[in-house]
Length: 429
Image (cartoon, rainbow, N blue to C red; front, side):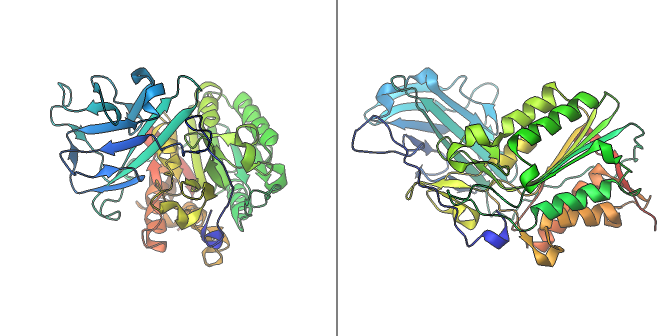
């Protein structure tokens, strides 16, 4: 969902029903209210919250009636920035429903220390009678959204020359087979993938062998084909090798279960994402258990910007996402915080939480993220002048270039990890 399609809303009528009343339907986040008593008297139901403080002594979660009657305390799960915080929380009941009160304790005497910038709170609860899972995410932003910009770092180390075999899986989807649910084609995701694949085969890009580069664009990037390409690459790449993964295209949460996040491929049906889209959790599983290469570089130019508008019960995209009653887009948070924690793994995503990845002809018929990547790889990211482009240098250059080009509307997230000094490209001055 990039700038060329921001004015085209991605509509999908999804009726989210519950058995609480035969005549009434409820959104997934309807049971929940978030309170931050020491900071504000506000009861938060909307997904975006701005706070002036850096610490939050107490978080209070309410599960409202009539939902609370059929939800046990043990089935209420709360996470802050991906980590569970239920342990040690007080639980009580009042006339409005059930309360999970998480406050100070020995290991957090001053309450919750928030990360600079954006913080993600999630709550999920399961109805013991129907088995339905309710879910809501809250994005906590400290001060103005542009006040804290994450820095990639990792550009100052000594470049590491990699001499193993190099494999790549490059995916770009601009054309989608099924548009009946309002899924719109992109303009340049396929061009992005082709340009990245072409560069990797050049001497400057590392001279990847043609047979070791799996390029899947548009109709070739089906769910079956993508799974096969990743599986084959995982099988062929040995411990001392490198795996390079690039994905460009749409992404979205499941409209019915917004906690489940997907990459949308050429044959994806939005009305049936679990069977036709590629789960983010599956990418994690492949990286954790199937790819044994010590070095994995992953670049993701999918915005995952779709959310569910709770008033219209429709899938929305682009700037519509930040309406008061929309579910949060937290995919890029999970990509950078959950997928890559192993030694030798590195990732950069095209945008931050709740941001839209943009594309335009003014960026050479590319997404702005890929445009910056290519410029960086071709020499502009060589910050120390040694004619080598490391992962850390590329991350730092790309982040700054995208922020400047979009006036900070798009802020790539970067976790170069221990691969920061891995050489990705060569340049001659």
